[in-house]
Length: 126
Image 1: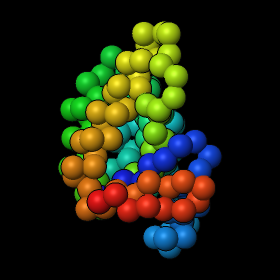
Image 2 (image 1 turned 45 degrees about the horizontal axis):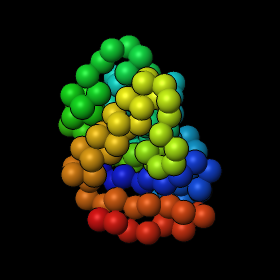
Image 3 (image 1 turned 180 degrees about the vertical axis):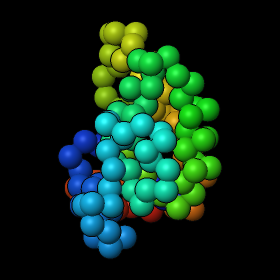
Image 4 (image 1 turned 60 degrees about the vertical axis):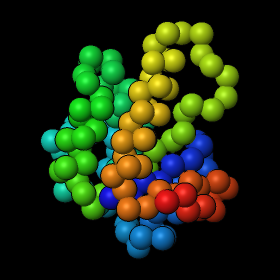
């Protein structure tokens, strides 16, 4: 597994397509896809929005993340960093940011590489 993260609109998706030589058709959206549909995919983008949906459904995000990892050991996961900046007033938004951070920790531990993309330039973290 590989984890690519960074702020919104920082070029993560384009970086992944170029660095890992995959096409747009190889990248699935976490915003719209269920866990079962992600089994065996090459890459998944917007994984943070998958987390947001699962929180709204009342799901156990860490448990589902572990299942995702077992089903997709070779997947490239693209995820926004959402924990930086102003802390939201709304409890739901704070919970969402915390869950995304915890999910990223789980993914990073399972990943052979972790890269942070800023301005389209990747920095290897792991």
